[in-house]
Image (tube, rainbow, N blue to C red; front, side):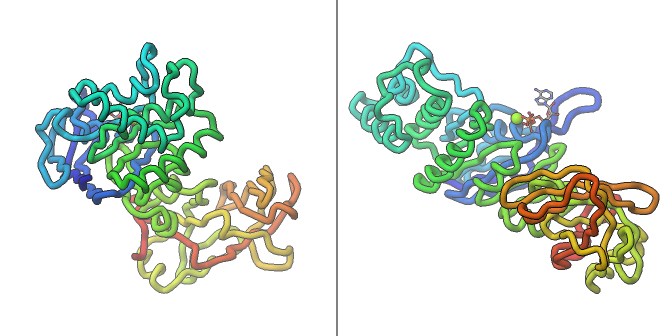
Length: 364
Ligand SMILES: Nc1ncnc2c1ncn2[C@@H]1O[C@H](COP(=O)(O)OP(=O)(O)OP(=O)(O)O)[C@@H](O)[C@H]1O
Ligand SMILES: [Mg+2]
């Protein structure tokens, strides 16, 4: 087991201009932690993971594993095991042989290999498939064999790069719960890459959000959701996404269509000098109110019925433009398409304000 740190680590690919795929990444992962790296395609997640694995050069800065600087240590000397998206199993080997192969290469005795493989198979519910070849397994079972290959090596760090993307939706949900439980049980430091924010939020002890090679925020799922550091994180974390609109601000508050949303003293102070702010509110912090109450006029354009709730998408006039808002409502009484409704802020503690240009969160 080991802690991991990135110390202002960068990977710069040559080109014109050069691509800073990972840009001065500083991140500390504690021993036994499950850290998820999440971000849109091309944000540098795989590159960051590959730098840790030693498969990619570190052009600036350093990487430490277990307190030791491994920046120039080859992959073999790093005591890590990696599970990729394409977890190519050896087709001519049985499940047991696939799982034990790395140990065999290391010269571990047959009895010890068997003991380790049996133990991992039990954990992964693969015992009855040990003699099968990979082609006789389902996608989820193959994925578990790939996990098994990593587990038997008893590395100090697991690295996983989108290991579930070849599975169908239902199996992904099931498998992500299994991986999280397994990690908990083994207590092995794990760094897990995904572009799926739901996967990130449900699996990680902490989640690091990357964009264009730059770390945006690293915190617990709760903290990312409640206090996003900037407008990008606010829009990226949470499904459906937070409503984010640039609106005028006065000494009384933020001006939306027909209403002025009062803001706290601290928020107004933080926005001092600005005449516009990026106003953020999650769909569940908005609500539909009766027509005689104060609210924004919204024309319903789409209703997504999810069962317990419904998501109402509609157009609201802000200044001269029409902007789309999403409101989460009770699933039993959704409005109908084309209906004009009034929307109001239900929870004023759930308002987020960001700088209209830099996107940085205003007020601490
Ligand atoms: N070998 C390379 N040469 C040049 N540029 C590269 C190389 N590998 C990656 N890049 C660039 O570095 C950036 C980060 O790529 P990376 O594969 O780390 O993204 P990612 O976050 O894993 O994306 P995805 O979600 O699509 O897997 C991208 O702009 C990519 O084009
Ligand atoms: Mg990738």
